[in-house]
Structures are given as C-alpha cells and as structure tokens.
Image (cartoon, rainbow over all chains, first blue to last red; front, top):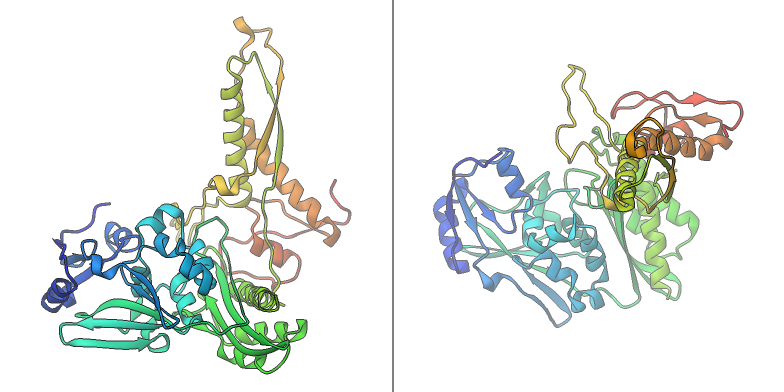
Length: 288
Length: 157
C-alpha cells in the first residue's frame, strides 16, 4: 500500500529539526532511516501529518571515543557502526548485535538512533544498549536531558521521548578489562525478528565473576535486563550449575507474548537456553 | 530446562529423471528451485487461519518463505531417459522437488526422532513441535495449529 498523506520536511540542522518538532511534535514522526517507520506508514499503522526527515543533518552522524566513552550520533547508519574498528575493539558485543539486525541492505539505511527510538523489544540494538548500560541524550528547543536505559524504554514501541524531543546521542561507558561478551538469538529464518535471544557481559578476576550483565531479547514489552540472575553470578566462579541456575532465574518472571511463530512457553524456554549459551560464551571469552 | 531445538536442511542430493536434456543448466536450476520450495514447505511455510477462518499469515513476514540462507547446496544428478512417445524425447521435469523434498525432509526428521519413539506426519515441522514431541515442552499449544505427535514402536527406516 501507499502511505497516507503527510507533509515532508528535511531540515539541514539539528536546530531546524527541533523547531519543526516544537511546532508539529504531536502530529509528527521523525524519519531516521525508515526501515520500520516506512513499512508502518505503508501498512497505514501510522499516519502522522508531518514527517521530519533527518537525512540532511550530517551533524548527527558520528562515532567517537573520548576518555574511554563511546558516543554515537543518532543518525549513524547501522552498517557504519557495524564496520567501525573502534567499536569492534572496545565494544565487540555491539558489533555482534549489529550482525543480527535484519539484512545488510536494511543496515545500510537503518540508523542506530532510529532503532533505539522505535523501541521494539525484539530489536537487537536497544537490548545491546541496556546490557552496555547506555545513556540516551535528548534535545528539544527547551534544552537537553540525559536518560538512562532503565528510564528510557517504557513499553512496546514507547520511550521516554516527549513529542518535541529528539534523540541526538547514545553514550556507552567503557567495558571493564577482563570482560567477555556474547550475543545470541534464534529466528527461523536468517534476518527475521528473533523468537528469543540473550546477550551477556561477564567480567572475570582470578576466575571469579566480578560483574555480570545479562539482557533478554523479545522477552517482555521492553528490552530487558536480568538483574536477579546477574547478582547470582557475581562473586563466584562460573560453573555449569551456576549458569543453569542463573538462566532459570533470568526467565522466572517473564511472560513473552505468544503468536503464530511461537507460543509463550516455547519462547520462554528458548530465551532460557539463550541466556545459558550467552553466559557460557561470555565467560569463555573472559577467561582467554 | 531451557532446552532448544533447531531444524536445518544441511544438504540435498537429488536425482531427476528427465527426457532429453536440452540445457543442463536450466534443468539443474529448475530442480534446485523446486527442491527449495519443498524444503520451505517442510520446515517453514504454513498457512495459519484463526478461529473465524481468517488467514493470518498474509505477509511475507508471517508466511515464511525460505531465503537463500535457509537452502543448502543442492547436488543434482540427471537421469536422462528420452521419451519414446514424443518427437525429440522431451519430458516435463522440475516439479518433483516440490513434491518429494518435503517427504524426504520429514523422513529425515523422523529418522532423527526415531530413538525417542515419535514421528511427524505433517508439514511444516517446527522446533516447537519437536520440543513438544520429545516431551521437553508441555503438551498443548497456543501457536499455529494442533499437530499430531505419532507414537511409533520401531524406528522408521
């Protein structure tokens, strides 16, 4: 189908985009890469009066590391981040997660900020950023604010962004030395939305887990951290038993939505298996 | 628990009976295409209707056609036997993969399941079905349609 009628705007500066958002916020959608929004428009599941296209705002596309902290401009293409040697060296979890994002042509157009602002709980980037303890920087004509991952994702396709606000930057803190990573998911076809998945960061010191981060994909209405399971792992060596216990705890209070592609109980069991695999892979990499 | 299952076609070897082969490349392509359809039907493609009879798999996001990533290398052998009944000996070919590949795939799945005494007689066979058949997920379902789990006494070979 064709999208409903809308007014198209393509500002060339962040300020221009913020002015348009201030004017049309409630009735506008920001077009960042269009890989989710354009299908939603074509299926007429979304019908904004105004589209504010950010493709002419070069100031929003960058990948920088300063004082060990990664800063990603919201309009950075997913393919650019995937190919970044800087990210591969210091945040390999993010590089691995990007490899699972749909297909290469989609990553060429899709943007990092677009995926985060879309907030699909089955999308890889929002989940990877929660595992990496990211902070989201937001601007409007009234100023700037920073929102941690915990407060940013509110529910399915809903974030803390106000109508007049624009996500401008994602900040990722450094990962401690001695940390192993893992990102794993299962879809029945390559590139489809995952039926379930998990990511892990495990920091080992003399064989003892000092810090654990576990994320669950497609498990709830938001990207989700398994903090109870993380605490179970911290302070002890990682064993087969502690891995299985943590994986069980990670899914104890989730109730994924079932549909024609997989029942709720199947998805829950799949995610438990994925968490186990993520802990195994991450701790193996940490031990190297 | 947290047990997982995955079904993946990892290879296919096909013998196609043809009449006179005019262009071997086209013959092999036709066979590979039809086998790809058959593998899709065996493992992925499913027309799902809701309780009111409305088709719910109406997009290619929901109706899972296989892509190149799901199809293994298909090795094709041609059994060329010209037809005595028509000039040139030509025969139709290239459709059997869609018919026979699902049988071969489900037979392979059942061979793998044989030690557990269960077998599938439907398509598509999904990871969720396998887990239920193996008792690794409780019986009952809330996705797709009910699929019988057949108890078998001896391995099917």
